[in-house]
Image (cartoon, rainbow, N blue to C red; front, top):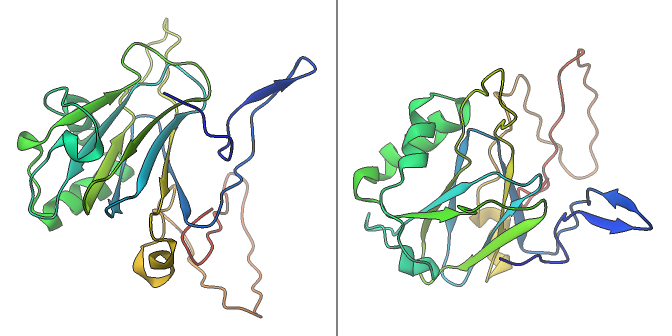
Length: 217
């Protein structure tokens, strides 16, 4: 595990803890994974894959599929931890993010029963801990942040993980990579072209997610 200085990692200065701001260089994508949710992202040979636990104590599970449908943890420089039980449990919950991942698996014809899981932070983690991997070939990466509803007497709600993809060939990003999935089912989707502006009225409790042409927030 390591912490990369360009990511939104917490730091302390003069006794004040700052949560960190997302400052991403060209060719780096940010994909939030909600607690109890999952996300699937296409990757290419040479890409750097990093998982950040912003709040700490949130386990993660990573699954890699090659284009031919095989799942080999060694292709991202890791060792298999067995079946992706955490991801399977997340998909069974039927969350919006889980439904999108299930649809992506079905479309690609990938079989989770034959997948190899890489468990991240299995022994616990501190806020800002990060795990990094490197892709040896093209494929699809799936990150799950396992966790269900918190019991009334417990203090262990699932929390967000951040998946960063640093592209080996940033030139592919424009037009080659798809933008990140929305954080929730969108009510309105605007495409703002250069030199244009649009107005939008929103209600209490709603939020706005803005992505650039490379799919970064």
